[in-house]
Length: 353
Image (cartoon, rainbow, N blue to C red; front, top):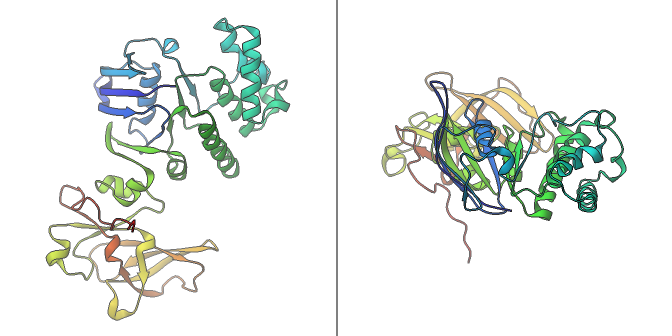
């Protein structure tokens, strides 16, 4: 296994700059997830790392060796694609062993690696089947197994679960987490799925318009977003972002120069009218059994200001109901006119006493 270092990596397609100077260090054994909106450059960055695209500028180092102009086949990486990319006329065993045979690996070693990967991925009973006789989840496991047998320096995953239904995504996500724990490999994973990013990653890299907005652990990004983009992107439902003068809160010594207040849905609480920072009107109630989401409009505020509220358990509220709410002060995020966080740590640190 190996670490990865990117220094000033750029990628242009003609006159269009897709990656605009990426600096990133990934430690040996880390599980890193790239997230960002469509077109932000996350899949392009993965392909540049893989060698499937050539960097326009900058340096790429794998395990300490500079590989910026090294062919994809010589980088020692393995990529798992969204489309599985299996050979339909080959059995599962043949799909997993094909690359090793081309590399001249001895037959006994091939058999050992395929058997080990099949056991890890629960594919032993399917080794003689062809991809067409497998479910989507099984085919994705074959694609992952094909990467495992190569014993790569780094695993690269390009939205590997997006073709699976919700139940299979959850099951396969658990298998990926268990796989990483077992083999300890360096893994880089591209996804648009918030839950995948939050549950799989050691660290998340948030990309926007070809640049890195923030890097951190899932809870670092959730609790301490560096700017408005990360605040609005990480979390589902997204953070509420309100003009600082919309809520009835004192500005002096509290809001300071903030122009935007951020608050997570779970930190907006129904309260007595006298204690309210806002009064909202319910537009939609989303009953999920163990929790309820209220999608509301703030009353008495300029514009169509939407506020999402999460309530534990079930609620008798209905569309059209009015509700006074307070914004929990210790969980507020404040942003200045440039969109940057005014305070580096808006949530008090946990006591270790």
